[in-house]
Image (cartoon, rainbow, N blue to C red; front, side, top):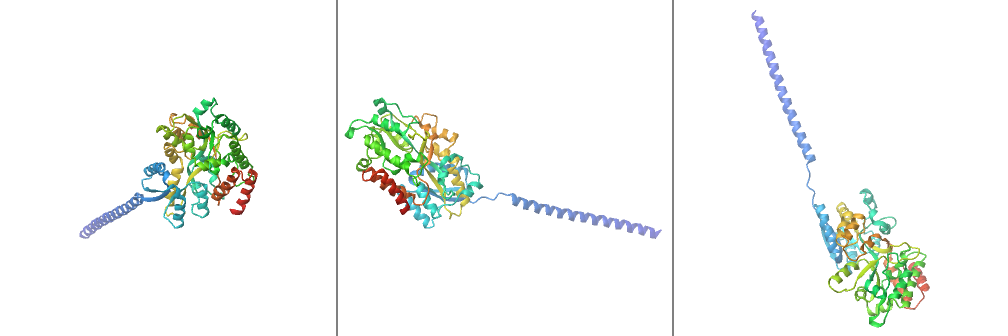
Length: 442
């Protein structure tokens, strides 16, 4: 009996110890599990916690005349990208091309820069100083549909290394008061160059300082060969017959006495703005940038006549609303250490968002769609009355981005056409010399 009790007591004791051990084991496991869960939670929190993005400053340069409009775009960009700041600076307009070339050649820390025209763009691109953009455009699915024909005009060997943010479009300005006084119908957007010549004759009268000129064509080479571009021709084509016709047309207008001669404009240093502003020029062939100038002149009382604009005249075999112009573009420095941020800014100013801001500032954006056109045109009360015409133009680039294009246009074309306009060689001789010199000098 006594031994039975002992056995029972031992059994109870053994069960009690097992129970205590089991509970202890359970508590240890629970604590261990809690610790593991806590560590995992902390690790996940560390993984998902937002790490503050370091602020980036991009150095962007252009010429001083563009600072006001581009400054507005910068404000919009910084608001949309608070971690990217833009250090925007400008060089004097006339010094910009030389100053930028020196900076880039010296390894400057410029991240993004503007180019005035295809001559400057092609020069820098040929030196490897512009970042190729084809891959970035494709990777980011960047919309180029609003550029129209301008985009193709930026390709060098199939590669684009610059994107346009605004453009110039050549148009015709006219003095409505002179048309009314002469009893001549206002120009339409479908006027041909033959009709332009006849209209200029009808508007021309008088002589000397009080002479009324039917039209005014400036002395820049583009002012003379521009009509050739409307046919799709370029200044480096093997067949320069469209250029020959354009040069001949200017000489015909001079022979009619309905435009001031090239040599007289040079001799008197006559500026196209002063000529039109005076009120004795019926029609002016010039870029759309003069619109802002003439609005200001009217507001300040410096232009007292009624004026409007029309599309450029065109050849018989060319559609109405065909013009020439030049994109103003931006490129990324291939040496930048901030390529992603630089692309963000470039795609902003050259895309739809930047275009909206530029349109509000009175610039004609390179990227245009219906919404952007509405912003540029406003509520319909902006002068001139035919402002909407600018949005309907097919624009050919003034000259393609090829190495040596500045020499071709501003030396070879200028010199040879000037000799023809001075009567020192025929139009045919001028064209042949242009061809020969391009092959030898470029």
